[in-house]
Length: 252
Image (cartoon, rainbow, N blue to C red; front, side, top):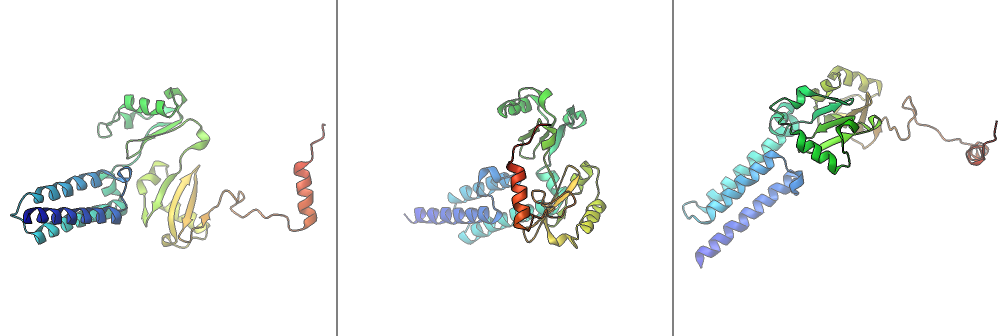
């Protein structure tokens, strides 16, 4: 009876520590986990399962071992967020395989990328794309999913700054550098990187999400030069504009 209570206490403690780790790391769903999380969960699970049936390891040693494992995983997760090289090695980065309708054979045939075109064709079919000829742009995401674009006007934006880290490799992919980013920030009157939460580039233009939640330039409301489009102030002007939009056009 005492042994059963001891096992129950170890099991509950192990569950509590692992669940706390998942909540702290923000990986409460399997779909959110990367390679480090999955390997770490196997190790923690093995540690809990192995200790349940042995009395050679004291309870405090068991708890310390779990806390050390959780600490290592949290440190590795932090490194992945802050160090681009470490993230590229442990998690990977997106791999473009089709650009401007042309296959990027250097990426496809690179053995380190392990590209399986039959698997990619199957994923495209699931998305309703039944021929590579319809694909204008495609890339393999770090999760293994495929992003495929058939309309060149809807190319995905590329995140080039996040959580205090400039993603230099992604800047290089579009032929830009950190200097280009800093010059554009200066032009937008953004004083320092610490004011930015996230930055992306799309269609050759930088877009910034600031720490206060504002977006620069806010393309849904801004004009071509980045200045907000002003509505007419006078009632007469507003009425004339509405009348012009709703009245049928006369033939020539």
